Image 1 (spheres, rainbow, N blue to C red):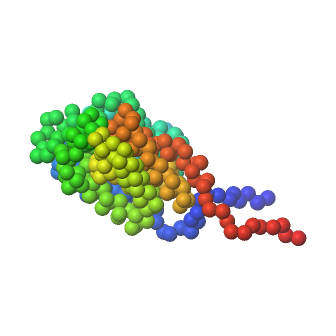
Image 2 (image 1 turned 90 degrees about the vertical axis):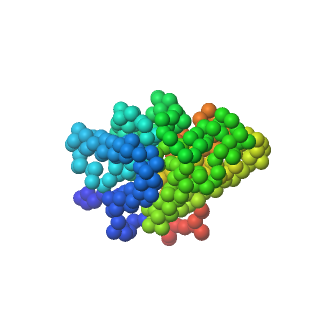
Image 3 (image 1 turned 45 degrees about the vertical axis):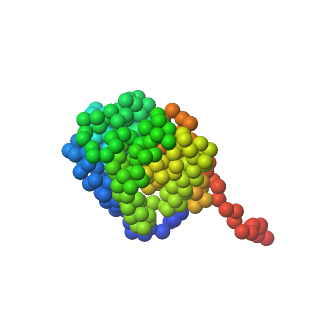
Length: 322
């Protein structure tokens, strides 16, 4: 009796010689401009947060491998990427227990409990972030987090200021050049817009993320924010403030593009990216959170299986053979 099992999955089926290790290593390389800038701007505390986040994420996966008696899988660097991105989304003053708790939720509950890499329906990094933001929101008050820092620019988080004061009051406080070059208060890896763009373009050119998601995501931010600004320019900011502040560019290139939780087909990719951006602006402008990136992308992760069923109809139709 033939016991051969067939594995059915999304195309492509031809291996290009790449590996999970190489892909994750390249994602980490793409974050280097932002990470280096963050350590220069926020100092040793930022390095400590990133180091603890990366290492604790790998340790949690190792523990799960040992407990479940499965192959040690930390060598593929997937948990390292989860930990690095998670650390980039935290303020530099985060306490150690917050980081360790967040990486536990991200790796164990967001990834390993579903079967490991490729099986997670939600972005593990965002699962951990959502848990922390809902449980200890106070630690994500970036204005308070950096109160003891002496910056030579406006030491306010742009989106929080926008939420409290409106667009008319804050537009002059945050020149576009400052936002692009990271002269703003925010998460460790989310302030340097130019660095995030460079890293994202690198990943697109190397083929590790799909440009369809990133481009439609950015387009969704621009279109939706512009519509709100047309409706009431005194309250709602223009597209550039939304694009270059908060977690927006991290979402466009490093979060929404996570392979297991994003679409595999081209048309769904455009829909997924645009709708995620639409939800972000809706949450920012009429919701209670200053930055809705985390929850918006998780929401699109939830409906991703439905979106991914949308595809062009095939030409012609088959018939029965006589």
